[in-house]
Length: 334
Ligand code: AHR
Image (cartoon, rainbow, N blue to C red; front, side, top):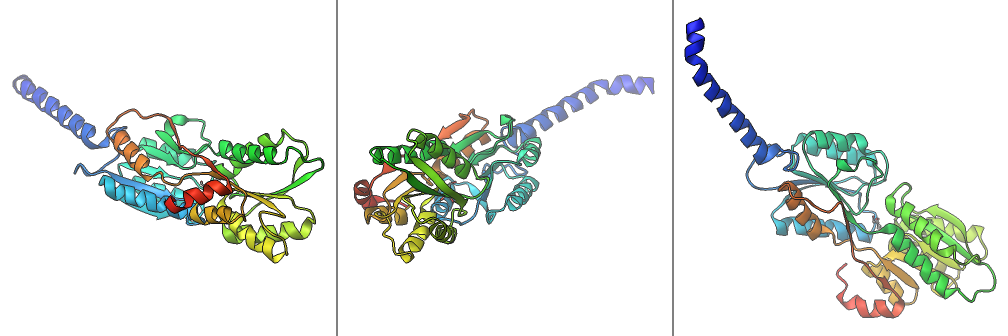
């Protein structure tokens, strides 16, 4: 036995070395921390994407942008619509982990409650990209980057415009607020930014604030309640165009003229919102761009290749008055 061991030692050492190289090689090709959990190594990137839902014109434009950009970039896209439910997103992300996709991207319905599933993705070696909305996880290593708007800034821009418009107001200016989906980053942040900005003028008071869930139906229904409960409403701040568009119906049905009797400020600047602004029914829009697809695919390629990416990529945005909306509408892409 001793003789045999002595004779086979060099061969065994070579075999061990070969298997170490082989395992290392496979890991480097497909299953590394940076390169994703890819079971197959056909050079093609597979992205699992979990979308919030189809609640607004903004969301529809965002979904189209992501699908078109994936095709253009040659990235295989697995797409799931979570119908505005966090549990559906968690289920979809777990499915993507099981399928060993190369990259997971998602727009979180709400900010909280993601640590466990993000840790599962990290442990599986699949990089995660947050797009449009972020999470409140303290451990920033759970995702590679966050691509999206500064929602606090959007709320601030809306509030600053109002402060300027009402600077000569001698009495109280009653504001009602249609919030986005409860717990969603854009709802939390836009509310915060707006409140910070209007604090500059003590005449500006939010007298009612409720969620309309980012939908037209929600905006209409809640605005009806606001109008019944409050005889004097001077301003509506809606966290997105769709809720503002729904509210238009309620305001008109109540015999008031939107844009005149009630000043209307919204966020997004989708085509229907821009049309309402150009028509004088809305008064001001802070833009939130849904065209995130091309940047997202670019980031997916980079994280898959193990390249460093910035931890935060902010979308460039602007604001629109009625005159600016008239000019921009003919070339508006969404
Ligand atoms: O997260 C972006 C927001 O979500 C948009 O402002 C809104 O329209 C959408 O539903």
